[in-house]
Length: 96
Image: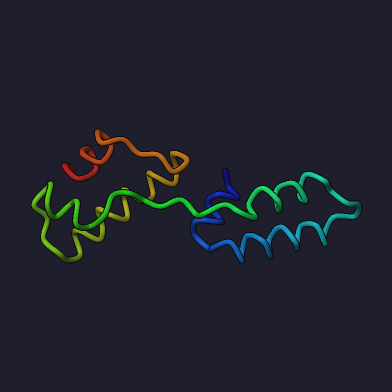
């Protein structure tokens, strides 16, 4: 879960460097780390489907700071929920 978060926030190169560092740091060869490196090799970073355009059109938001704050709250919940967010959760954030 944390590796996916690192992958999303920092990119594949950073994640690869992080895993390589952990491999280098371990005293013996950790096959789990090798498997993780292979697992993420061909993966794409998760993409948040809720966009500013969605909030502007569906919830009548105007461009600006408040829109950015709501998008950040949605993104944080999405990350916390393993890159999943329901329409109800978006509604709850937008309407608070």
